[in-house]
Length: 532
Image 1 (cartoon, rainbow, N blue to C red):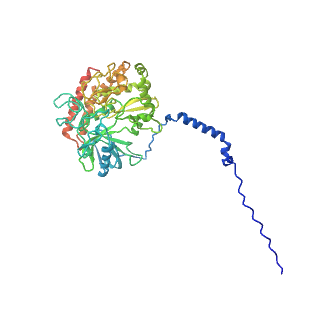
Image 2: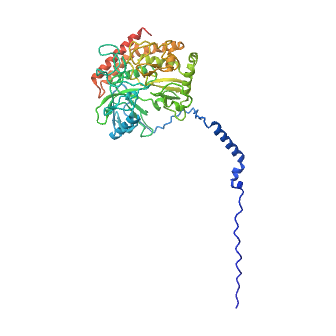
Image 3: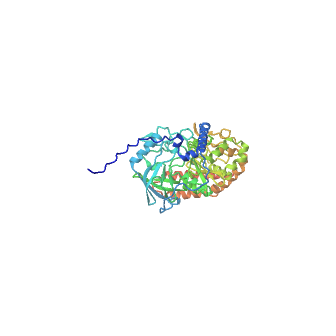
């Protein structure tokens, strides 16, 4: 038998484990080549952690960028210039009651002012899905819901309680003369001549409430005639139903060439509620800030804040100022620098260095204007009503006035050296006079227990002889422009003509309020004629 014999299979190779790699070979080659650098970095981080572990590291924004942070996607032109103050306007809001009740829940429970989505019509132009929220602090202290106020207590800025409600005789606090011809001495929660008291606000009457209307809360980047926000002012505080005193103050500031806000009167309707006549005012937002200068930062003083140095951490000032524009490229550091300097400067240093921080002539005009307009609640009032504008080119501050619903409600015979007080009285407040509290940064307690008033910048400026002449010059010029020229009387004539055409007005109240305001203007003009 023939055939081929098959070769036997070779024995299988034994299984051999791969050789073990030395530990350093397990480290990637790139790391091994740079181990000295990595070791140095690790050691440095360890030292930083040990040495600076308990030290707060502060971020500082040093960029000089001045571009707006919000992109405008649409700007609705409308049919009529909203701030044409020579004509009456029409504004209506429609929103769901369930949303409104949730907004009230948030405010009455936590004090939060949440936005409600609403459809808006302005002078026949429909703007869907705007945001609206309550606006104000002391203004809302007397707000009731089902007859009850918020359990937070309605505290006024500075710790006191603003006296809400009507006078004991049922009337309403207002400016100007009393019905019997006396000047500015209506008694009530605010004291003699005070304008802080006001008729109560009820959540069941949304057409009477103070509102902030935002065009871009629910539609990003939208504007109306370049505006991001507008404020619907409330009646009854100082100026009565029509808030004619605020409109007059805004008009006179504009006549004098000072920074102010535009305004107009409008019929105002909410859902199916009765129409009321309301004052609408430009709100200082990013668009407003862009019109103040080529490049600068706008800071809003907050009602519960102070002007005291609290260190270099910007977080410590979040209750004092809110930055309006250039967030991300600028910060609060300029304001902190000003406050720190104010707290440390001696009187001689204040006189010599104020012009390094503040536009002195502009500030003199601001202070003089507040006296001329009998504004108790300015930067030194309990509402802390002012903005700071920081010019990035000059690196100096100017003060922008805001919230004029307590103008023309004090003693019309106050002189340039007298301080306007809530009670309508006076005390020496001019250059060289003893000031509130007696020292740098001290604040006056005036107008009732707990109502803190005063501002160290204003007080030290008025107390300094170094600035006496610049203040006197500003006062004389503004008196001529506002009063002696007849501008105040002419502005009142214009207000009267418009108010008589606004739907929802209270004719009797408007007539009385305008007569009182006119009497105040006449007395103010005559009393200052021989003083300036």
